[in-house]
Image (tube, rainbow, N blue to C red):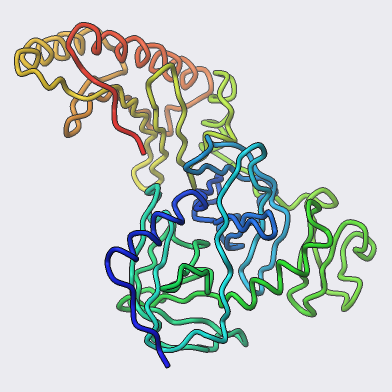
Length: 374
């Protein structure tokens, strides 16, 4: 029999209970969600979130962004396991029992849609055992958006019953989650080689590692071609303008891997200022926006502040001070045909220095305040 859904108070408690185990994952390949399973001391996500990367960045409620190794990849079931953060005590969440799930059960899909730091949507199980490519999925009507991939699907008891995996584009909230039974099987299979890089063969499900791979190229069980990072280069690399931007950031002393926020997007810090850089392929330009501070609450500061921002723009060659909603932003735009390492480094260096300078000055002289961050 299908269970009744939780009331609002219980739902809120379930959502709050998962906040500390939800992990945001980024690389130049993409971004998405993961979650920590203490029983196996592992971060779980989708394979398509990490792509062919051997290393990604992770961040969570209890720890700053850091690098994490991709331990396990399974393209058939779209699963990946990552190294958890060291020195961080994360709470326990339970893996549920797929056999107890029924059509009509209330579920909550949790993740980082569109790069937002935390979001949860409630719905019901529309159809159990929806078969796709020989694998069972849970079809749900809870909205799963880009970035939610790899997050947990949670039942009304607060137990994980699936991994949010994909949607059907154009469908009306047609989301699909891989049942927890597949996840538990994969976690138990990998537990014996935990900490080592392993690939699950898409043909025979055999676990392939550097120690047992046949001739460095083939599954020892069925002969399917397998590529393991470290044996043969498989990680995708940035090219073109994307590569130039990363070389510039590295020259300016930024950790490029930690800066990556998805395809052609980066975020760095300079003092207390946060700078977002993006490459727009369609319109052929690179935009860099330094978010400085929030407009002052005291009305008496507003006019003098606006006058100062306008006057400063007369002295800024490639940079512009502006207001976006209540945020003060220092920006620059470079067209990709004009970008080279020398000009890019000069422009970005100037942006970083000015951003840190203005951020401090505006707070001291005009009563601006820190930008709220999640």
